[in-house]
Image 1 (spheres, rainbow, N blue to C red):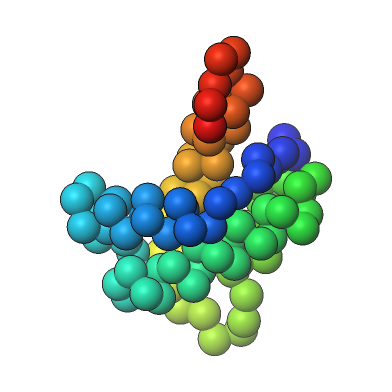
Image 2: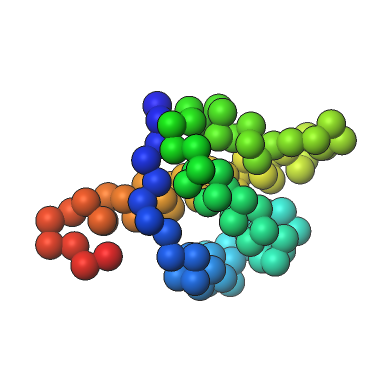
Length: 100
């Protein structure tokens, strides 16, 4: 199914993921700084290619011939986290009376 990305405030997202990393659980991928780089790449890919299927969008994040299975799993998990976050933001944005 194609994905329609809502407008994203990267500063707010940075703060959200920073809190998530500290309070909920550490982000996969080597700590917050490295994870944030991947998260930004996911946000950019989602904005540039909104008609991508889940598989196509994930392939934009998983790249390189020297990718290990462990790193691919970390990137896939980050991709999934961003997808869930964007879906939640989209639902809030579409909700009647929403201020988000």
